Length: 104
Image (tube, rainbow, N blue to C red):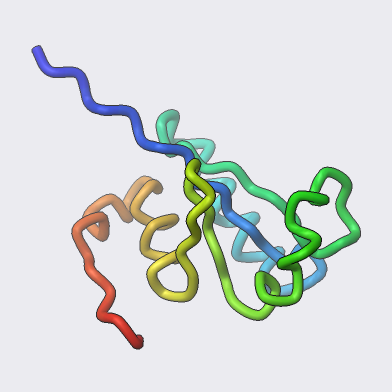
């Protein structure tokens, strides 16, 4: 019997001061709670949250566009980051094989 390979953790970097971002992340967190192995971690990088000092140097860049960070420190942004995040959620797993064209 094959065990599924655990998903690498993705850190979702979001602007906790943005009303649209707040609603989107609240929705995603709700879906993530229903999926025990989604491996998503959420970090508010808006500057008002404690514990986000690791992102101070890149804050302006990170706030300008949606990002997720992989365990190795590399980041995905824009549509590619959304697909990576959504592919971890119930009802969105079919998007896992979706490929984003470069420049989109």
